[in-house]
Image 1 (tube, rainbow, N blue to C red):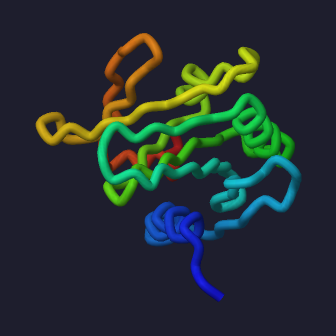
Image 2: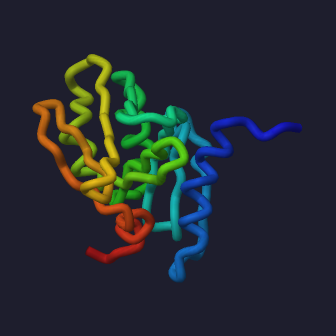
Length: 151
């Protein structure tokens, strides 16, 4: 049996998580609407999405039901401390706390939403581009550090 692309790209997230000094467990959700949802250390939820494109910007498209189903699956499992992990080709993983992701993904709008990410060499880390064109910096070392921080 071969290894599909999704497994390879989700593996980029898992490899960094399991190497963290406070890592204990990683589990996949098995409920409806939980595609790409996992729990870390039984107290954090992550929703993994990838863009295999090598060039920038990386575009992550969300259908109206995608993100709502994922957040609901995490909420129903009592994973209120949830994150969106965006795999940007082979350049790295950009992590967004649920509260930040929600600013970009208005699930009540009923339309497809897109998150765009750049990684300009001159500025170092990832740059999240808001729908209004605002440039929001995300440090390269935020993943997986932010996932395991207490604050």
